[in-house]
Image (cartoon, rainbow, N blue to C red; front, side, top):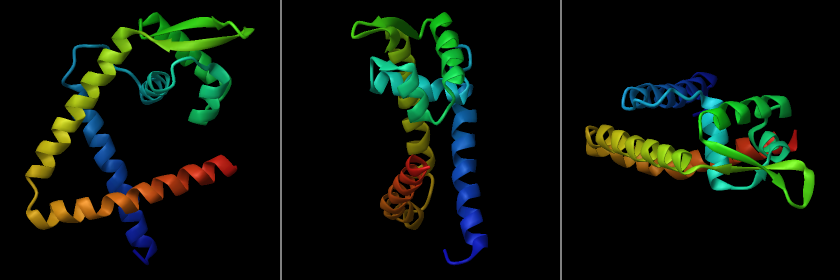
Length: 151
């Protein structure tokens, strides 16, 4: 991966896989479609129930008013509850609803099944290459995350 062309190919391949997974999963639900930022916020709230709006904005690298808009949208859709923080009455804590948890569980299960099915169609050499690439891809993701944290 020494040339700029190869690096560009990697970035395009990763983006393409992610886009195609999302597109395929959209067709498998009757629920209203959630945008990427809505899903990201919902996943964060499920992982860290009680997180505040400003902490969520920082974690997702979004403006506070953007997260507030997403909170209002997801609250109206029945996916989160906003309650007053007992330690700071001016702040709100965000909590997932059972509907949010069920939707994310369903999405995760369908995503895993889709990827498992597609990987099974590859030949053994490709499956081994993908498995071998996982640690490097995790290090790449960690490095990107750490760089964003520093800025």
